[in-house]
Image (tube, rainbow, N blue to C red):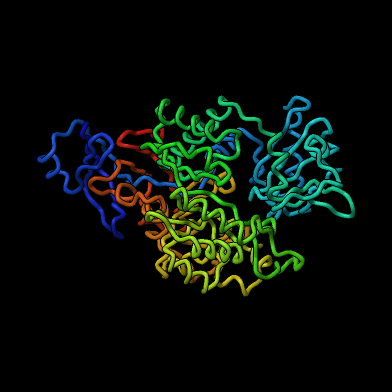
Length: 524
């Protein structure tokens, strides 16, 4: 069925400023672009879609998200907007009043760096609210959490429990604090969420429908290792997206612990098997990102290495034997050094692109080595808006030169893609685009630009979520642009993103989301 899309500003994203008057699609594919009258003469049009003066761009793709986690967040206690410990405790108390005894309460997204009162959780304080509900409250980075006494008891964690490799059980003055870091979280999280297929289907459905509202047509997501069987998760995606006809493009990062389980799973049009995912370190917020030098605000810490250099090299070798690229969570400079060392030892395979996810703390030598390896930097622009100004104290002024250094990456020819890391940050891509261009904080002084020399242009920022995401997944020849032969995935927005003042970009809204030529969302 041939459709002609017209009546708005249509940006191809092939080059900056290029617009066309109309686009013709035949089912799931773009077959022509250009002058409307000429296209009407050349093609028998079955349906006209009038854009009503709106702006159409290629379908936006989030290159790093936890899709099921995003769906869970929509059903859970949301602490992301709390600006004080007092507010967190009030929300927990409200949830306790609504929840049967002995049922786990899971909260998401607290960030002590924006609290205006005390920064540390207290087991005694939460005991006052309840001692009959196990409670787990995840920090925004998901590299640490707070769990109450009952939750600790159910997980079998005592003052004598040894911290696991790659994790830490929080203690102070010979007592548990309730804080768990990185791998130490795993036992509690496994108890707090025992997913059924129905639970997963609801989370996936909620997440996809929410993505559509932001104009997102697909995501690169990492979910396979957190909900029991990886094949159950994959099956859930098939049930919702393929059998349930929730049109959405999924590129699955395969956690290294489930690579063998997923080895016989083939890619399909809507569900692609992507690179091996490896966590190398933690987060700056939890002081678990792996740094060469100590944290400026706590010189007793350099972060956590989840693997030794040799162990990481062995994992990369495993990926290569399975003809897989790798996608590594690496935030600290030493973590990225570990990754680059391993890739130099076990080079890329079959032109598949390795990616560094986050890569927040860099230096000139690391950038040069990344360039030589043709790696993709999978960045999350909204991190800047959330992390500044507190991250300056955490890292110190000297390290800020190469931190969140996206202009440096692009100027060195390093391809970048753009993601949100939702549910850690908002999935709204226009907040991410704004953050890449404005480099201003959500929480600090509103007019301060952090690292002005690293600002991106609006075209570069939009490219992160279009051509950048396509390139990261080796789909640059079929996705990411409005071009003949490409997938008919479009995002229609209410304002011209390239004609606005920068401060107006966060207020852009999707009015229509199109996947494979079909409108999957239309704003009422």
